[in-house]
Image (cartoon, rainbow, N blue to C red):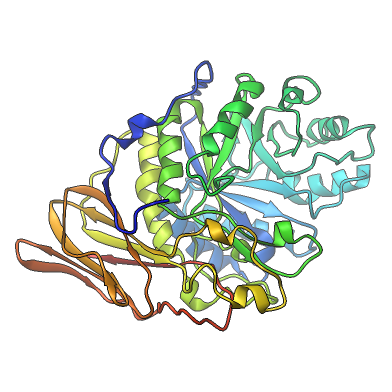
Length: 445
């Protein structure tokens, strides 16, 4: 249980995260930060929207869009637009495809050929394709049951890789229970992708345990893992364990996860941010310019997460370079949920009680990036932090959420340098909609 009001200066904090032994995989290719893009949420996109997203992502130390593609017949055209947009406005920005095998059919040879025709062949010579170890990068979400007309899933994927028409760096997220199979049945893959961004319980910081275990079974091949700021979904389905749950983003979990990755950077050639635009699971950091799911009420214009995109720049740059960036501009980041975790509406709105809601903490999270020492006073409703003396660097603390607005004032040498009073967030103790999605805010000094 974290204190109601706490402060943390991050200098030296990375030393506490254990590095894995015998897992160091150093490559000649530069490190890359990917952002996972749900193409299924971009029906309303044109090439100009893609240009805007590419420029924004590249300004936040993101190097590559990982294009999660499904069965919709319009999706190949959106992927082509994204590649061409990058070519026009950001020649060094790259894209790769991630095949969503919970959507794409994969039982027959024809299914496999359709994937090759739509998502591999059109981009095998594109200058903005992401290449690793001299091969075109291809990942998946799931796919452990795909056979493509062959006798087994490994045989099916081996067929697709062999018939792709270009060398592939194949790094699937096949969801298998026995990691030892990665060096036997699945030994032909170039690496493994683990969808592993959030704590598995109310306990913070346990993601790296899974990473280290899977990496030990990859045995020197590539490894791709995830980092994400939030997770909430509240949708009716036959499987509420998947569609109606909260995973912990509290206690500055996004920073904590980046901290793990920075400490273990020698073992990681790439990392992936989940996500750029998955609105339904509340972990988007890009602009809310795509098509939101029509059956949800917890995605609103006030749930903008672009402050997290800006926040990402600092830690992604640190992970890539190995050195913390200089803070040249004072800035305050804040985020919170708009109502208590035990709000009655989350149990009586017909969707069902949110699984793991009790993992959350009813706190306003504040991260102050300071170029020199300063004082801060932040509040939520009638609660406040008191005046805190803070040091140069990254400072974190919390304030218990209370009904009303939030704000933060930062002063230096008696002069106010930031006076943040956001008007797009109000904390309510009696909400009419179940919304454990986050609001995020940012103001620079």
